[in-house]
Length: 296
Image 1: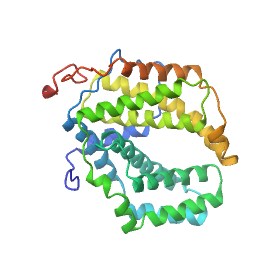
Image 2: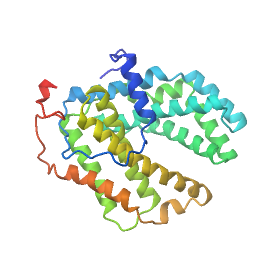
Image 3: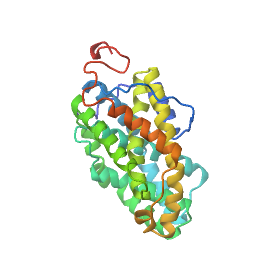
Image 4: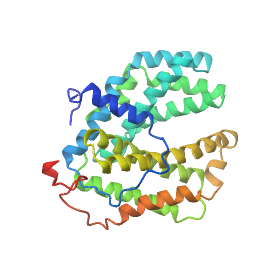
């Protein structure tokens, strides 16, 4: 699928999606988990979920302005107030597209270059937030190089050549991701790195249901979005502390272990078990509204 000339979504739809992206870790402890989950979406629906993510990213990124901002960060190792907000918004769009691509592309694997670019943004933010001047300067230098025209075009080439997942591949991917969470939950203690791997899976679920609730509004999509957003918020608060500890003592992130809090374990267990209940059978031909796919 060549996306370059495809931007079918209205500014209002993109605005609503971006509003959702900005609160992707908002905590609603009383948010209900639906009694049943559904994974039966058509290839067209999955393509639209990616396309709105791509359009939000494509229309919302000014590479030259971002490069100038990164150059200023390189010089001063700090954000100006307006730069911090702009950087936050740009990074949010990159992260959302990263999650959408991994979930919705037929290979379910993020292009390495795009991953490196997005990860470097996170490294820069963490270094500045934790007053690591030398690391911030190095991260800004590397990011500045990646944002020059030719490297940037090469790094984003694959996200512009998205190939939509089949319905069967999408279903298998989500179930495999939930298996990974169950594998982690089976351990009494886990490392911060293992915790972060589970959080990445939840982040992809957040991006997926953000897209679905904008494109295909329903109580199911809305409730799933709030439930996974809550988990993402709880995990994010914990992971921020691990990042600070990692800066002080890197090995702790990979070897130290801890017990996951009971509330978070309960929420993750409930979510993963909902998908386990599909049992590989599902409800073929039925969408999240309980309607035949062709009526969606």
